[in-house]
Amino acid sequence: MPENKKIVIAVDGHSSCGKSTLAKALASRLNYAYIDTGAMYRAVTLYGLRNNLIANGKVDEAELTAQLHQIKITFRYNKVTGESETYLNGENVEEEIRQLPVSRNVSPVATISEVRKHLVALQQGMGMEKGIVMDGRDIGTVVFPDAELKIYMTASPEVRAQRRYHELKAKGEDISFGEIKANVIERDYIDENREESPLRKADDAIVLDNSYVTPDEQLDWAYEKVMERLNRNGN
Ligand code: DC
Image (tube, rainbow, N blue to C red; front, side, top):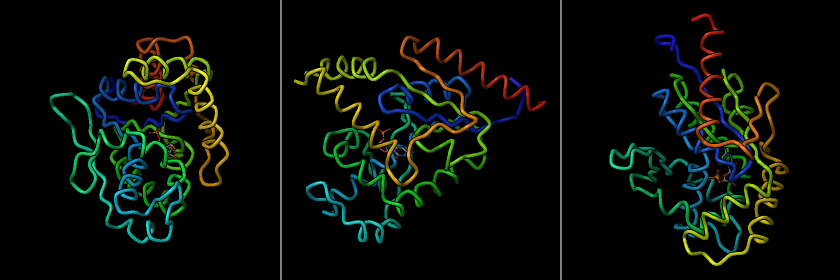
């Protein structure tokens, strides 16, 4: 790998298509930082739930916006698991932000313009020194429009629902394949059709449809793209 040269890698795409699996593995192989921006929207949602700013699916937008400055989100590396974990005002909330109450309420929080502006500014700050892999929905379009490598991931709704079905069944959840597939399709619709920074492929992003690709194969493919970018820049 060319010495010293570091780039920004944006990984965007549909929900449940393995963005974080690829982004984490790529960051680890490159010795780059990995930032899960979905976790940041989830942490703001958890703050809102805990402070009674979200009730019955309705968000008190004005109050949540007014309190944004007191929501501190950080990531810390856990040496034992080898994973980065999300902290909300100094508390490890990595598990709680993945649970149902947050999952159910994060979509409306992610549509609030002030929340997005606040988190985008934080994300841009994290990428200032490059050497970062960031995954989300608007990384290549809004957060880092000049990222040296943009990957847009997708997989068919059937394949994504199948993967999610196996994950949830393994956890003992009682849910049908049909329900999961409907949820995958609904989340795609919300992500692609919201007014604020909808999910869309940046013009210069490379599409990775991983319906029939293994995690190892997609990692090798992405690593090769990184090497091409590093070499193309003449370093
Ligand atoms: O990737 P995820 O499921 O953890 O994302 C949680 C929510 O946040 C989901 O509703 C999409 C939204 N999100 C977003 O709007 N922009 C991002 N950069 C990342 C996530």
